[in-house]
Length: 253
Image (tube, rainbow, N blue to C red; front, side, top):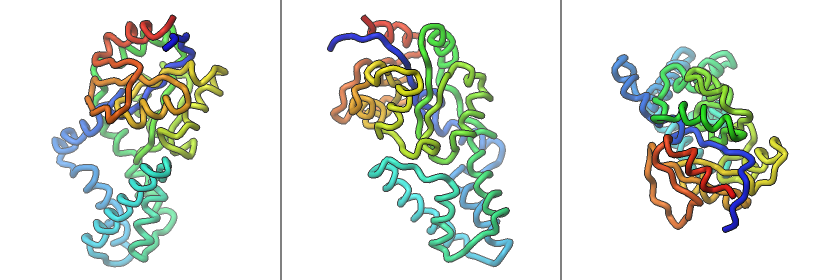
């Protein structure tokens, strides 16, 4: 493959810059339930203030809505907002909430990973400081429960927001990886060709197959998770943030 100058480097968020689920031990230490339980608890409490309802019914409706969400996410490359997910749960229960109660439930769910945040990947902030001196940097990430506005807050909380020039979150652009629109938005923002993008992530299907489908390059980062390639061939692999600048340099002319 002919090497080409890098016009922008894009980063996935979960299991790339942040170690997904590392907030759970913190929650346990504070005496809080796991996020999955807490989400259902928030909705059950809101519904119960208006009319009695069995918690098991809420759990079942939540599980059904989660399965529907995953199907749409994986097959249509769309991530419903948390409000849309809760509305699906409510429809399954044949119940409604006042707008005020619905907003309180949604906000409580969306803020969980900001208020008690997961750990940063080791070396990520130091690496970003170095890369920022050379490249245009952007975040390209799916938003599963926390929307883009709170993921920006999460980055700011860890003093990482300042390193990025642009953000593409699935709830804001209307599609999730590997849909081409996420990478095309980056190219448009920076005024570059899509093949000048190097995307960094941990999921071969989304983070290698996605950029490859539009002619961009994909770098597999195994710092947090080392997943099976499932037939995808990354343009490079990096297993240590301290080596990332050198790996990117090796991809340029």
